[in-house]
Picture 1 (tube, rainbow, N blue to C red):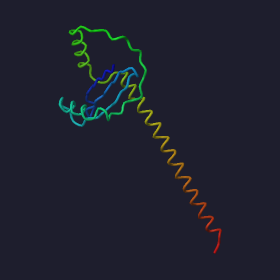
Picture 2 (picture 1 turned 180 degrees about the horizontal axis):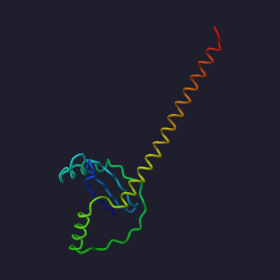
Picture 3 (picture 1 turned 45 degrees about the vertical axis):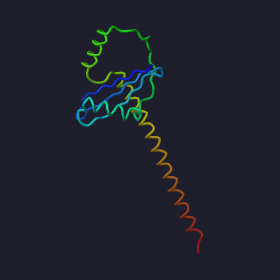
Picture 4 (picture 1 turned 135 degrees about the horizontal axis):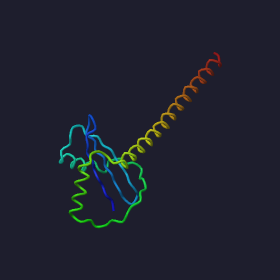
Amino acid sequence: MEKIKLTVFFEDPFWIGVFEKSSFNGYEVCKITFGSEPKDYETYNFIMKNYFKLKFSQPIKENQKEEIRINKKRMQRLIKKQVKNKGTGTKAQNALKLMHENAKETSKKLNKERKDHEKELKYNLKKQKKKEKHKGH
């Protein structure tokens, strides 16, 4: 069973949406940026069109409790409490931070490889020029 939660909040100067997905794999998070305040129908359309394009973080294993049926009124209170609570939860923030660090590491690796490749090309070109010079006429 998979549970998905979208939290939209204002983080100066943009509106941010955080998708939180809990499943048997673990807990995953995806952060999206809206420009101006999204209307309900705009968020719905965004979810319908772009949900499968979203890039979620690596799954984080969590201890899952067995699902217990919750009274309707209690569920309404919980939903009201969550709506009242603004911003992202600490679990979501940690997952986003982890995702950011992973992206940073891969970027560093790619840049290093690119620089090494360019360095090698430069060296080979220099070597070739030296050889050409040395051959004579």
